[in-house]
Image (cartoon, rainbow, N blue to C red; front, side, top):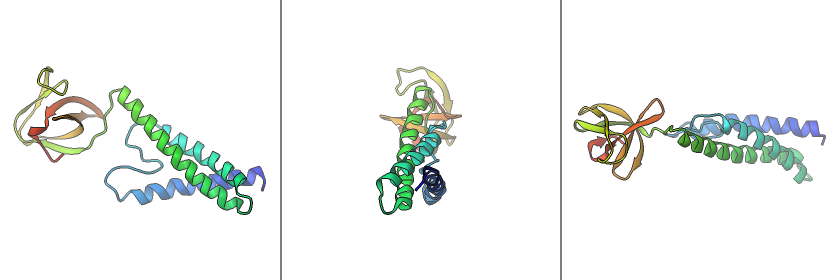
Length: 164
């Protein structure tokens, strides 16, 4: 099989995996799949494409009798591995830049202070009214992050939070 044909098969397999995996995963609550990382950035897509192309080439070279099947399987495995690595890179980058994953809607059960860190020793940066909805981020011990525009802006005590 020629290099051009292997590359064409690999790119076709990558395209199929990019469409199929997120479609199958879309029934779940949180984003998963080749191109559905919850962290901002584009490293997942780039790594999935690179992994798929390399996987297709390697798969077609390893498989003596079924080069097409090897290319398709290699592309799917390579795209999945590249996607996972890229998403992990995006998450680390987002954490370094102060971005946080939102874990969903929550609401305050009482009037509560929003603090700059996860503890009463941190200064007050705002408040939530009883019943007020907000985007909940990471949980650090008893404290829940308050997320606005993809960034944690403060923390509230988890004892005053429901729906999280």
